[in-house]
Structures are given as structure tokens and as C-alpha cells.
Length: 344
Image 1 (spheres, one colour):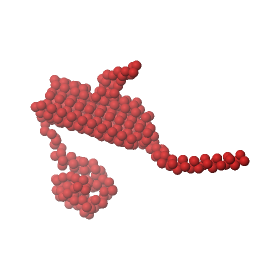
Image 2: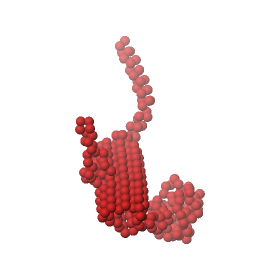
Image 3: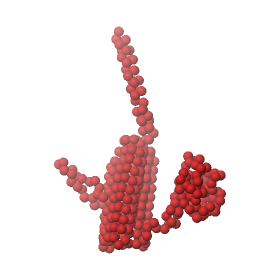
Image 4: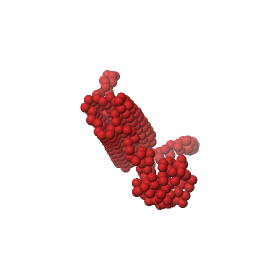
């Protein structure tokens, strides 16, 4: 398609030849003739002079004499739209509609239009699957679960019974939704299992990475809010509530009944203790441990998590400990000498 057509798609302005034909997308270092690339960070503007791309998507005010440009307010978002168009085929389904002969369907299963059920999918009784959903091979969906329109479930995902999955949800391979929460009642040294009879609700436009585990509520529900994005290898315990448009990065652990507000970011390997609340728009830095409730709009780090500026001062002080210890030792010797003089 032409550069002009792409500019119309992303609501951008062409600088240069608008009739150039674009056939592919690539990173700015890997791009070749016929590709379109993008620059969203000023650190990479120097590469605009050497890239082999036929055109570059840039932010407003960025100029270059070497290649035709599309100027737009959000170059990264514009590039993702172009990727979806050129890679996925103008919005067409990436798997053919239909039911493979090896699919096992339970009783009273309701399938929407243009659903794709691929080899060896197992769907239990009373499941509902929405229009244009794609279920890849070896997926298990438990009884009375509901999968929304245009959901994309990759191979070997397990969705247990009575789970609610919204529209346009993406779940990557190896993830388990609705496993039992880690609930035991210790009596005289014996751990008795507490029945986990709740559910999981995943709202619209959520994406869940590979090998994520989301436990069902003990009683009640575990909730992943609309638009939230979860990276690989994340553990979400029973009755956790995650607000809309949050970001949960790899290897995060969230303990039972914790509540995350809207727009929260948990960076890699951070953790949240049970029964605490993390306020809206809070950022928890990598490897931080949240042990108590945090107010909205905070930025915390360290263990236990504390305001980031305070944590930085503490870390800076720790780096000075050898010098401080040496100085204290020298002061101690001076004090001892003074005390001996006073005794004379």
C-alpha cells in the first residue's frame, strides 16, 4: 500500500513522496527497501540517516532529508497499527474459522459465529464462546465458562470451570486460569485444604503472557480489570483485584486478597503482600516488596517498599558505610585519648 494510505490510517502527515509503496515493517536497524519503520525515542534519530527503510514514522517536529516521513502524535502507536495491517492481513483472522474433527465438545456448548477451534481442544459442558474467538490446539475450557468475542487463546492454556473471559482477551501458551488458591487451615500441625469455590473474571482487552497462574477466589472472585497487560511468569493469588489498565511485569507475585488500583505498574520480580491496597497510578519498582497499603500516585522501591527518593538516600548511605565506619573508629580513638588526658 502507498505511504499516503498508511498516513490516512494513522492520522499522520506525509513529508516526501506519498506514492512510495510499502510492503513490510521492520526495526530501524533491520529495515530494507520496501519496509516502513519508526522512531519514537530521540536516541535513535541518528539511525534515520543510515536505515534502508523506504519510509519512517516519526513524532511531530522531527525532520530528515534522507527518507520520506509520516509525522504523527504517537509514532509507536501508529507503527503498531501498520504492523497489524501489513502482518495480519488487513484485520483478517489469523486462523481459519471452523471446528477440527479432533475437538471434544461437551453438552450445551454455545459457539458464536466464525469461531476457530483447532486440533485437540477440549470444551466441557455449558461453555459459551463468543463470535470470532480463536482457540488454538490443546486448550482446555472447563464447564460453565464463558469466552468473549474475538478472544485469542494460544496452545496449552487451561481455563478451569466457571471462569469469565471478556472480549478481545489474549492468553498466551501455558497459562492456567482458575486454579485452586493456596488455602489451607492448619490444625495441630496438619494442613487441611480449604475448598476454593470462587471464580476468576478477566475483563475486556486484557492480555496475559505465557505461564501465568491466576487462582480462583476462595469465595467470591479474582478480577483482572479491563485493559490490563500481564507479562510472562506472573502469579496472581486468590481474591486479588487488579484495576483497569495496569501493567504487571514478569515474575511478579501478588498475594491473596491484595487490591491494585487503576493504572498500577508492578515492575519485574516485585511482590505484593496479602490484604494490602496499592493506590491508583502507583509504580512499584523492580524487586520491591509491598508489605503495607500504598496511597495513590506513589513511586516506591526497596524492601519493604518505601518512597523511591527515600530508598535512594538509604542506598546511597549504605554505599558510604565503609568510610563511615572508618570515620567512627577514628573518632572513637580521639575520644579515648581525650578521656585519658582528662583523667591525668
